[in-house]
Amino acid sequence: MSGKVVFKPYDPDQATFLPYSLEELVPLGHPVRIVKQVVDQVDVKPINRKYKGGGASSFHPRLMLKLLVYGYLSNT
Image (tube, rainbow, N blue to C red; front, side, top):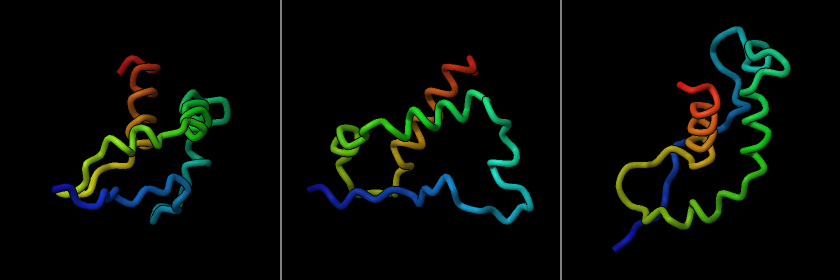
């Protein structure tokens, strides 16, 4: 039996409680901006179909993909 797939809320443009926005903190031309632009264009539907659902909510696949790509890129 599989349940509904539920992802944790993910809004990369969400304002924070801090007085700074991500746009102010990340310099233009920084590799993280390139990763965001590229991964935002990736079709994640095939990844979403792999989720069976049920259980606790998952992190959004697009968020996880950005973390993995940037981690490999920055060798961290």
